[in-house]
Amino acid sequence: MTRRILILAAGVGSGHNQAAGAIEQALAGIPDAGEVRRLDILETTNSVFNRLYDDAYFALVSEVPWLVGWGYDQQDPPFRLAPLVQWWDQLNTLPLVREIRDYDPDLVICTHFLPARMVSLMLARGHLQATLTIVATDYDFQGLWLTSPFSHFFVARDETRTYLNQIGVPADRVSVSGIPVGPDLAEPVDAAAVRQRFGLDPDLPVVLVSAGAAGGPYTLQVVRQVLRCEQQFQTVVVCGRNEELKTQVDELVAEGSGRFRVLGYTTEMPDLMRIACLFVGKPGGLSSSECMAAGLPMVLIKPIPGQEVRNADYLLEEGAAVRCNYATTVGYKIDHLLAAPERLATMAANARRIGFPQAARTIAERSLAVSAPPLWIGRDAQKSISKAGEDGIAAADLDTRLRTLHEPDTGASLAVLTEEQLGVVGVTPLTRSIELDLPAIKALRWQPENLDLAAAGKWLLGDTPSREFSLD
Image 1 (spheres, helix red, strand yellow):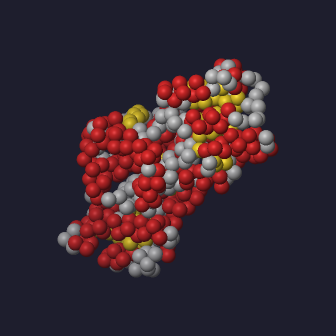
Image 2 (cartoon, one colour):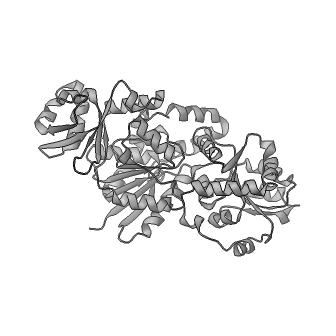
Image 3 (tube, one colour):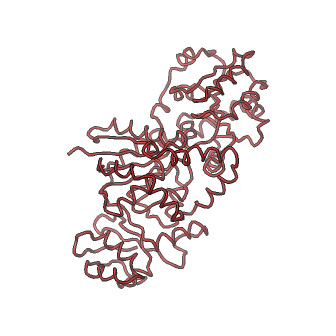
């Protein structure tokens, strides 16, 4: 039978769908990968839920960004989502659940946390038998992304993997892949041909100003700053789908039009990134990863509190970007960098060093190769992991010790539970293996204090009468 692969994203901004598209493209290049279908889950929901998830979020970003940052921090520890929010999400994604069940995928790859949660719930309830891989689309981890059960988690950098391991997620379930981008970004480009296509001077440096796919209004202030720059360069301004913004920028640069090329939405960003020497824009996960893959230094503007501030921190730490804390000094920053070609070259080298141009291919290949069943994290273990994340304490230092059950032959992690609840079936701090059997697990179902262990045992055993596991 042909393997069925479902890639799920959510159209909150453009990054999640771009990441999904990059993975879809990578799968298309793998022989016999299977049948691939990609879906924006918000297209399956009602208009009210869609607007609340997308439009309302960006309205908050515009009007009360501090509230967005506060919400991000509140959900930073994993497994903290309020039951009412979970119920609301489930109620509004019923069409999605039906669509997934009808397609009956063998592999689901999620580039947004909402579909990851929905698929995980379907797995837990036995409504789906599939591998679930989750692809984070920012440089730092955020608690909404972690769910149970899941098969594999792909993160953007080593520190994020270390963080997840430290709070209790088994190491074999997390890989550093980078954020998926188009593979062309690291390939050589005919710079002269690209410059000619866009009517650019063949010799002057190119600064690329991006308003994002939606066309952020802050771009007007950036362009005003560029007009005051003293260094000799030319600017490509990409206004996204905001036609009003494009008209305003056209009017603003009319007198200096020889130094500017103003575009609307374009699919040629990979070419533009590869001929530019500097990118000016927001540190979204996808745009930042594209710049890193292309070796393009960044001037960071107005990061959204939460994920974009964290992205900015990482890019600054690695020496691949500078940040503008004042809207009135963007031109100064650009001039300052262009006047220091050695520094700009170092920033470009740093960007290439932390870039992952083959991230999509890595994710596609490793997702196809996953053979272990999804990892179950018990509710008591979830509470411990959440506490570790909230208090900044390694799971190994918690009073409630976590124990991971492994498949003895392969070593694959299968479940994370607490030592306290495993004590019911005879586990002590010195225990290194355990045998579970169906009669004992069924008996636990009548003990309210052991329902979590009973659910884990049912997941681990399935229809198998008994099974042995190694413990660490």
